[in-house]
Image 1 (cartoon, rainbow, N blue to C red):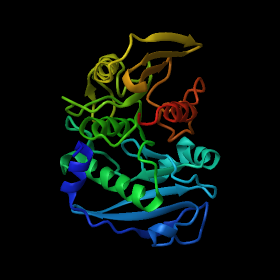
Image 2 (cartoon, rainbow, N blue to C red; image 1 turned 180 degrees about the vertical axis):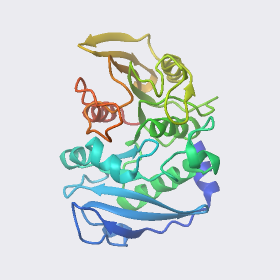
Image 3 (cartoon, rainbow, N blue to C red; image 1 turned 120 degrees about the horizontal axis):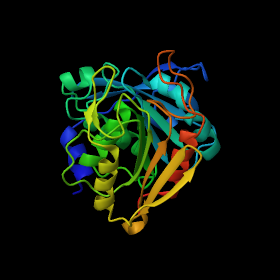
Image 4 (cartoon, one colour; image 1 turned 60 degrees about the horizontal axis):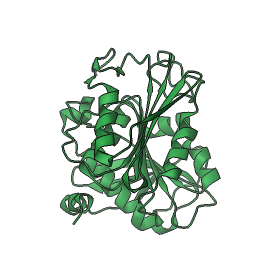
Length: 304
């Protein structure tokens, strides 16, 4: 039995999908029958052993048969609704016929390891279990292709994507943005990785060490995290290209996987190419469209 299946079995979750509310794109209430969900973005609830958890699901009108799934994890202080609004994944879903799910963390945070972050870490929330149950539900109810399950996240959400990859084998690829790996990761399953980071990020420092801001994230240097995944995936030495302020370091790996580190010179703690989240946040760089970059990476890296 794979690691992911063992974890799912251990959860003993009775999953019930209940519509909560419709978003502005479609004011009709969501159908509570998971097999007959309406197109558009709707809020749902999944019951777990730790209590109900909430998420938003965007389903395009023209959904592929056995579609790919992108799990978009908001940053610390963010939310499912904010992530849906800011990062442009609904437009990708409409164009590509994929599903995008936006889970909500407890207290707007994820328990991503290393004491991070906020309420989720203090309460030792089982966010890995929650995400596994959610993915399981979508594979069953929406006929998601198990070989095309992808996870991306911003900041604390990026850290959570690493935590999920470190302890399960359900993802084909992950794409952390402006985060680092804080979870224990002694023997992860191979997975394609695209890490995107602003070289001037003061909150989660590219070269490691304590960052500024709430929580003062003290993580390892990002290059060392990427080198660990290159070893896990049995990769070639990286080929480096630079286009303007953007530097790509790409390694090709066993079974067709890929590990890539992309840095944006002058960019801070942000999702380049996105909308401004709040006035106090670093303004997003216009040097790279991160959402499109991630989708191209995901599309090229299904599970072997």
